[in-house]
Image (cartoon, rainbow over all chains, first blue to last red; front, side, top):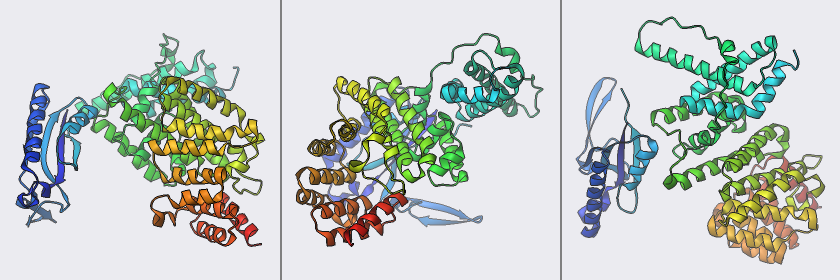
Length: 118
Length: 412
């Protein structure tokens, strides 16, 4: 069964003007690489990506059949979707175990969503 | 026919219902199907046992008929999804298979508890699911305990069961690396359930069945996990608290504080069980919050033998509890114990040191504790002010009566 692990974090941490020490960023990136390798090794990796910041997002909204564009993410919250892993796991516990291994800054959240089975 | 079929069924359900329900749930990995299969078996039991007399092993009968029913339900569901037409179904004949080989009912209760109390489920959903699936409490009864409508409770249960199925929560005992987190979730669930049952002593008869279930569940868990000291600690804690139920209210329905209760009304059997559980837990050598809370209550219970309360011991135990599990409740209770052990001035100082004073102003246990300490210090005006503040915070009927009486005594 597949689970989508959605990573939500405060993107400001990564913005250049925040002045976060680049080594912090490098360490987290390296940790993602390690996790990716571990997922591959375990045969659990289906896909993974880091997303561009939410100010690059466009939301296409359909209301009563008519569509309009909105400059920005679906929800304007402090923590934004910043990336995801799509993993193959036997059950929720196994998926949660992967989610707990996802690296990040001091504060972030990972939502674990089972993929609908057709 | 010997005993009445209905009576045998009630007895069997009371004694072995949880075991049969758990075995069905685990066998089919489907909580809804297990529930339906159990209900069907119980219905069949009344019909069949009235006619033919109860079977030799009524629990095994229920399990066999329920299992057969679940197979049929599963087959029907499969037919529905795989073919447009309804295939003809073989007529279920549970009665004939009964006398054939009864296999022993596997004890799957622990696995079911871990499924129902998975930390990925909201705490209130966990306890509702446990009471429904394992204990067999009606949705209506659970809804009443949580002051919600039957429809809302049914939705909560349906949502939880759907999550278990669709997010694939595993029907297994957790792995060692997840054990601590999973066990904590089970213990927290039981603690919440008991707190709800304890809530209003004035509704004693109504809350008693819920208290009875949590008492039973905690005892069952202690039997299934005899080497987990916190499991034993929680079972002891619930027993000690429950032992005082008969002494908690006076004839007028007013609350009687623990230190003024008639020890002759305490349930000695429950206290003895708790002491045995705590002794076993202590032997395992891993302390924890539930064991500490049980120790506090056991120190109160010792008044039954000694006639006095060792308040200094209680204050020390609260210090230890606060270091492992800080909470405002424990801080306020510690201040009360300090007030008894070292005098009201020390108690008031301890109460004044509790963090977040502005939020505490509107918290009933805080105002009640403050009133008690001021009264003890003979500062009547401040005591009366605190009592009035407490009364403005919508106390439960038993506590309202108690507070009103204290206020009347002060302003006499």
